[in-house]
Amino acid sequence: MILLNTHGHFDHVANNDLILEAGFPETEFWLIETEKPVIDLLPHFEADLKEHEKYYDPHGFEPWIKGGDLYRGLNTMAAQAKIIPLSSRVTQKFGDVELQGWQVKRFFIVHDGAHTPGHVSFMILAIKSWRRGTSIWKSSLLSWTPPLNAVSW
Image (tube, rainbow, N blue to C red; front, side, top):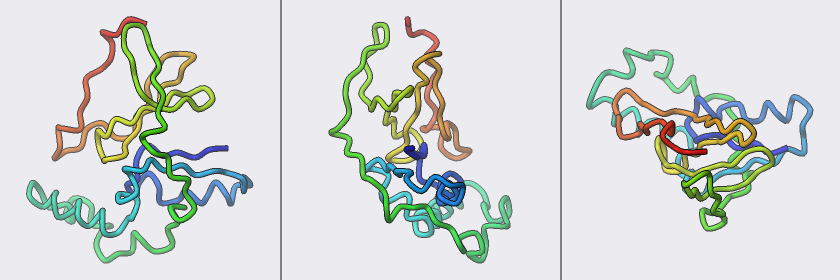
């Protein structure tokens, strides 16, 4: 089994180790190389909070974040991650669109860098449907990407 999160923010990776506790000890954890700095939870998330303070009070909006309680006992499995280089992507054509990514079983995984430097999206090949982690963040409309409904499959 392979575990690959859409990105390394705490709300997506905080309990990655639960898959091991669930009885899947052979799980391989993949991490896109450009996401390595992001999965370092505390410094990155605190930097995000500082950035968000320019727009609103994230501590008032999410008071449970204060005091560091959020970070106790989390295991992202980053220390045992298999780092996936961007250079290992392959090109695959979908209709008249060519995308670079990784073919993993029934998924085609595309590095889009939309929300974090290593953010990825998953295409379920059988139904040609995309799954993303975080598309729009309140203070960053730059992370929004338009729908691909104009693409001819």
